[in-house]
Image 1: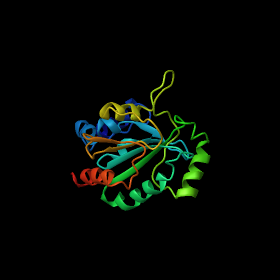
Image 2: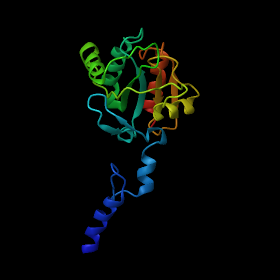
Image 3: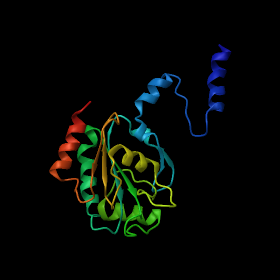
Image 4: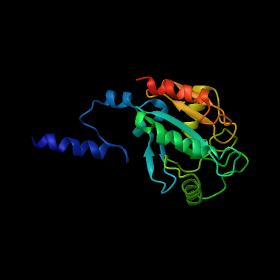
Length: 196
């Protein structure tokens, strides 16, 4: 009996920082539950606390690189509307500010967060500013590297969109000019939401 109590404690000591043991689920099941494309930890925009994207496993995930001073910035309104309308059906929108294109996201994390909340009422998760497009000499957000590899399409401007299926086996890319209200975008979204 005593050994049964000590074993979880020892296991916790052996795990890397931030890792958590889930003794009730076999490791293979836990790993299979989170698609490889979501196996990344990102920092929240508001407080830079780490968020494991596996917390969104089993949902349809919409990943968007954003900017506050872009001709497409008005899409924040459509993205927040999608978030509100489809969250109950399993959609999560994830925003990733980036200053990669036209220097259109120059602000601090606080300035970006305030702008999103006060101008567009953004409530979907937003993450720390990062690089999303390949360029010599800079580190690109690994999530965007994975998404570009899966689709063959890296962002060419702000508000590029990736729809990721619940199992992570389907990733659909939509260019910046495609508004989230566009019928073709909504058709792809509906297809992924209906798939179980």
